[in-house]
Structure formats: C-alpha cells, structure tokens
Length: 436
Ligand SMILES: Cc1ncc(COP(=O)(O)O)c(C=O)c1O
Image (tube, rainbow, N blue to C red; front, side, top):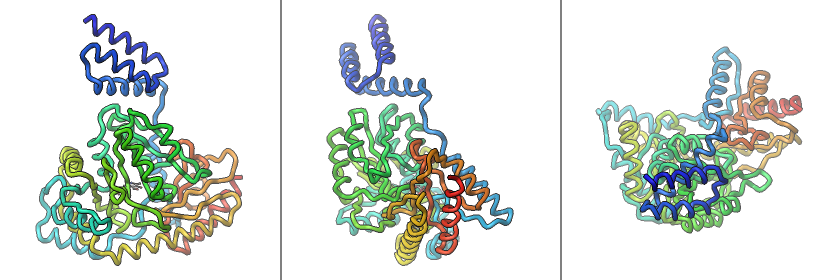
C-alpha cells in the first residue's frame, strides 16, 4: 500500500508538470524500484499524456462526418433537379469494370455467397502476392496478404495490430481525416505533424523533430490525399531510417499508388523497410468504392493480426466481392484507362485554377486531387464551400477537413469530365472573387 501511495504521488506530480519525454525516464526508474516493467511505465506515461490532452479539450473535429453531411446536401440539390458539379468526395465517377461486375454476378450464381476465411480467399491473396512480387522483384507469399474491407479497414486493423493503448502515432497533415479518428477511436494518440504548401508539403524535418520513443507508428500516404504530393525515394528512405532508429512501424497507405503523374514514387515494399505495412484498395484504380475491398501487405504475423481484427469486427469479406476484385486485378486495360483519365483531368484542373490570381496551385503529381491555397485573407473554407454550393451549384471539400491549419485551402476531386470540370472551375474562380 505504501508503494502504491508513493507511486500515486509521483504520477500526480508528473500530471501537474509539462510531461516531457525525459520524464518518462523518471517514471521508468520509479516503476522499476517497485518491480514494475519499463513497458508498463511507458503505457502509463502515455495515458497521463492523453488525460492532459483531454483536460485541455484537444481533439480533431469529426470533419469526415461534416463532409458527409455536406455531400448529402449536394445530393439533395441534385435530386431537386439542379445540375450540381460534385467534386467534394474522394470517389471516382467511373464504376467497376464490366469484368468485375460479371465476375461478381457469376460468383453469386455459382454459390460463392457463404462465410469465408477472415484473411480472404487464397486465390486473391496469391494473385496480389504474385503481382506485387513481379512489380517490385520480391518473393511475397499469399500469407503476406490479408484482404480487408477497403483500405479503411486495412488502416484500422493495422493500427490495432502494431500499436497498443496509449501509443503515439504520427499523422502527417493535411491528411485523410480517418487516420486521426481511427487512432483515437482505438485509444492511441495521434501526434500531428503539419506540413505546409510553401514547403512543398515536405514532412521530413518535422518528423525528425517530433519522433521519440513514444512513437510506435508513422502513417505515410503518398501519392497523397488531399495534396497529390509524391514523396520521393530519398525522403521515403529517410523516414524508414528514422522509424528503424526509434523502433517504430511504418504504415504506407498506397491506395493511390497507380495514380502517379511524375516519376519518383517507390512503394514501401520496394524500399524494404523492416517493419512496414502497405495498404491498397480496389476502390480508386477500378472505381469499386462500394464493393468495400482492399488489402494489407506485411509480414505473415502482422497480416494475420489484421485478419484477426477483421474476424472480430465483421467476420470476412464476401467471397463474390473478392472474386470481382480478382477479375479487376487482371483487368489492366480498365485500370489504365481510369489512370489516364484522372491524369488528364488533373491537368485541366491545374490549368483552369491557375487562371485566377487568388488561387495558388501546384502542378499535380499524383492521386485524384488538387489542393490549392486561396490567397484571400481570413478565408474560411467551410463558409466558402457552403456559399459555392448554395449559390453556384459546385461542391468541393473544405481544407479544414484535412487538418485545422488548412482553412485557406480547398480540395477538388478530379471526378468529372473535362467540360463540366472547366465550368466548375470557372464558377470557383468567380466565387473566390465574390468572396473577396
Ligand atoms: C488516403 C486514403 N486511404 C484510404 C482510403 C480508403 O478507401 P477504401 O476504404 O474505399 O479502400 C481513402 C478513401 O478515400 C483514402 O483517401
């Protein structure tokens, strides 16, 4: 009892202080005097940090949900008969290739509609392993792969698999909002790194500054949503080195890996990081968002852990969906057309938006988005988005959805054909002038 009282006193003292990483050493020492492990000290320290943040009222707003509400309004306007230019979601306008649709229907007809293995059917895992092995000159086996409910569950299951309660996870902003939400949902703590337009969205220096022994996972997403940035090989290697020095995992979300419009991108798989997970999806390349199918690639133990999380949450991915994914994987012609189409549209977006002095835009590198900076003082991205929707029938995603520091940005998805895209850009330019 005496020990407990003493420990409580030390913890209360720590909670009242600034909680630097050095203090973890103090706590570890005190814990060890009482026969408690270093690992327990680290977890406890993380919980103290979390509690402090909670008391300070920190926490990412539910921006993903706000964007869904906004998209519902755009849909409502459409249903009222208006022509609305929908550029707010990260969802391609092209649908699944006929080969995939046919494979799904055939599989249902043939009775592939029962429960299946939590990590996915072997045919699909083997096909993915062999395709990636060929592409990156590796020797991946089916057990390196787990099929997941989209990239979304791949990310979720991976965070769960390689981190523990209270661990810190580096999230590089601007970012897909679900990273921080999932990290928090799982009781881990996002360590937000803010990159900047004027620094070409480069995260390396900031990761160097922020990395510590508390970081257990670094999430990378290149080509990036929302900026479209591609992190070059040298920088990827720098992240890998840092992660290895600090014993952290890397989760490389590569759902946009096919949408590269300049050289220089290398998958984490090719770069041979020791503790790495690659996430991919059928949603973007083949326009199969509603099929909910993606995959993770890692060492067999980690892939199995992701599958275990999936088994707990949703049992498995429907087999007819996986058979559709297998058909899509072999349909390189459809993928090629989609990739070319998005590339052309990104060029159009760049060209059209560059016409305004109030809109600063970088040449597109990858993914399906453009994330311009608005040269307007006190720009409020939500206010602008609502005005643009209600007055000009154009829906875009406010920059604030991707992090609190990006209120002077908007994200535009390349998901309309050339002519409507040009018209939407004209209205965006007009709306910025009026906003000013
Ligand atoms: C960066 C990123 N990762 C993952 C996903 C998840 O996609 P899905 O779950 O449809 O595979 C998205 C979707 O927008 C995304 O933008």
